[in-house]
Length: 281
Length: 310
Image 1 (cartoon, rainbow over the protein chains, first blue to last red):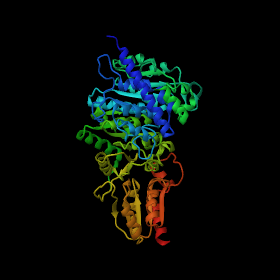
Image 2: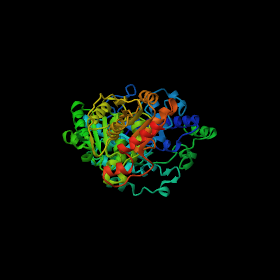
Image 3: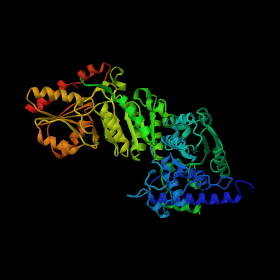
Image 4: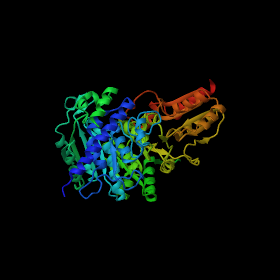
């Protein structure tokens, strides 16, 4: 049987569209937040949370009814500002009711402006960039100590990996042969101040990660076939941590937000949100 | 004569004991395990010890990942790097998550000596004290180091334990260690001397000199800087003519400021500070630095006398 099936791809495409819909709705209501990088990573994380391996097993093993299940796979959002995406996924997965999304960034909400452990499904807070790969490393080492076979996934932003802490962690993940870590890089090529290659060039990015001892997979981060294949390829790598360098489009899925740097940290106006939601119906 | 011990030797030995008692204890270091003595633990429990090389930020944030999986994580390096280099990681990953992470840093204070200013952490208490959830212990000698480390292991949440580089004299008059409760080491009704770390012993010397001049000083070892034993501080303010606060740390943001914070709101009294006055350190033997920076028993006694006769 062909993997992934056309039916599976269609299901995930529909799910990703719905997640994008939730992101726009929640950000428009909150009045502030980060749409661009949430939309660029939507396909990557929708496939993680809702996709399957050829065996039919879920890629990401979790139980929303028991968020602290000891054998669960771990996910950490190192680029914490893109939490609207994570919140939409967690609500859709059943960690908390969808109506909570309306409370994003409000006083007393379980949904803070950056990830926080008060949100069911969030393992470790983030927001200050550059620390998440280390957090993933800690989770990975805990699995080694406890002889558990859970996996650790971590999503990083491209601007984020300008932080020195990321490279300290990159070195250590390889040193400790953390083959249970799969990092995902959302390479949408924009950061707050402009184009990544103009602000602080990351290239040659594949060579950098390889030189640091990582197994590198380079994909189109909006091609669901490639995304599913990459997750499947990653889990079969031994002795090395893996990174999926995903070429993405900032603001992907809403025509007038794509590749517009302004939408890194600006939410759509009421009219823009209506237009965007129409496109995502 | 008092026995002189390295606090870090006791720390290293205590960690090994804790490691035997609790398999959830994990220890991290950043290329200073032979100095901080976490190497003792590394030798006995190599599968629960991780060296990160010269990369403190990564070490601190990695502690967060381990703690999120239920580990009790001890993190060690020099005080300068634990609190300075990795401050953002301590704030946002360790303390904001309220993780079970114990930062035990050695080589704090001016008595680091010949290595000079770059290695003499004089602001570390200030940096750690400002962060919510963080608890701080500054043990006064080797034996108290064991008590502090055990208290941190048994108490949930983040801790900062501050250790010195040099040997510290062991106090002879031992009191029960209770986390958060200061110890009255000498009674007196004229002046209160509140001290932490190495300067507790110095304060006791100053108090015996003062007694010869008929000034009875109460000496308090305030090993727990956060949460502070406010009750005892207020009581001392009420019952003596003034307070001298002594620390091997900057007078900005450390123990003296913590004491002031309590008293200026609840019972204002005259305070004199023995500490480093808005200066960097420099290279010299520890004893010479204690003299140069006015951290000797003479300085404490003089401050106490000034308060008493004012």
